[in-house]
Length: 167
Image (cartoon, rainbow, N blue to C red; front, side):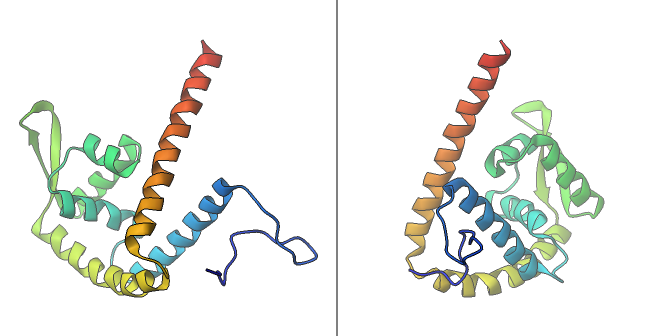
């Protein structure tokens, strides 16, 4: 499959050279951020916010720690999103019955309305995106899971080496 937009940089002669896979994933991430931002423009939510609303919609009430784990975000970032959503009246909190120190967040009726408004825009983009892949979505998901696993493994190794150097 040939891409109209190469992830590989060109040199002054216009020929492409191989670059690291990690850099290609980084560039792809930037393009996906641009796509999702354009898709949600005017919907009332940014792409990063829509991700938090989507998680609460799909998974139901969750603790911020669970959300951070699911989304691969720092807990402080999730707490910032939840604070902003709560200020808008889009999320409610209640104590977690299994851990009295924690709370569980859920979308309110207003938050659900906002999520559904943004979902219409998201789904319009998704209808164009999936066929443009040129391969079964299941194959893409398997590749993304492999990338996620490799990322987690590599990050653990970097943390361990960092701890080893510090200790």
